[in-house]
Image 1 (cartoon, rainbow, N blue to C red):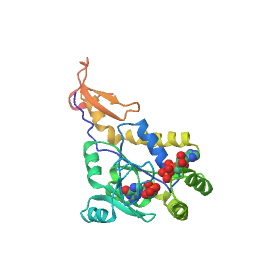
Image 2 (tube, rainbow, N blue to C red):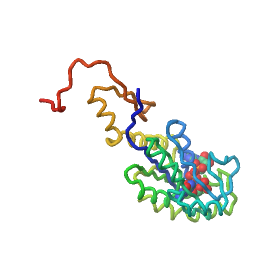
Image 3 (tube, rainbow, N blue to C red):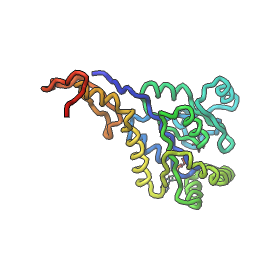
Image 4 (cartoon, rainbow, N blue to C red):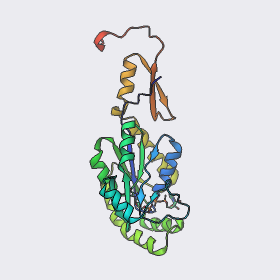
Length: 240
Ligand code: ADP
Ligand code: 5GP
């Protein structure tokens, strides 16, 4: 049995103003789809309580970040809320060519850059809070940032919200379960786009068997099928 996914990985970008719930939603999606990788960004921001280097972010100093940017090691990078954040180019290229899907929790500048670079392989989702008042409540209830940081994040939230228009899908995160169902539906739909199913269709046509992987058919393998009683016609033209 050979693993012939035969398509490039899918890049799933999730953006929102800080506090709208994208980390929570991304974590749930990753738990539901273990084959979905996560793009761990590089940042000059200091770790929050509970954040682990290499898991949540690669925490680097400003000099290291600048060297990496100069050496073209980022697929995109941006300054967000006064800190630098960047996406590893190596990770993205490796995932694309290995047919591995990658989830990104990045801001609208990052989404815009990746869309330009990888237009055929990307889906962009914007998470909206139900209101600005609720956004503020969530930022405070998360209790991970000092007042000055919260105030700065709220100041730029309105500006960030305007960029919803550059995204393929917009999900209002009022009720977490409902928002998660919508995000999962977007990902599952993207997996079933025709371009990603060509190898499966060709395999069936050539008499092989397609074995779906994962509860939602996140991938597939192709294996020889038991013998088929009707020989395919040459050239595949069927009379009707
Ligand atoms: P972001 O990653 O967008 O900054 P988080 O995922 O950290 O946001 O969520 C911010 C806070 O809001 C967290 O405390 C989280 O538990 C909470 N939260 C997320 N979604 C909802 C929701 N639908 N209803 C109420 N609280 C939520
Ligand atoms: P936080 O400091 O709350 O973890 O993230 C702040 C913002 O930076 C969030 O909007 C997050 O999506 C964004 N971000 C995280 N990593 C990257 C990245 O690699 N590139 C870009 N452009 N934004 C990022």
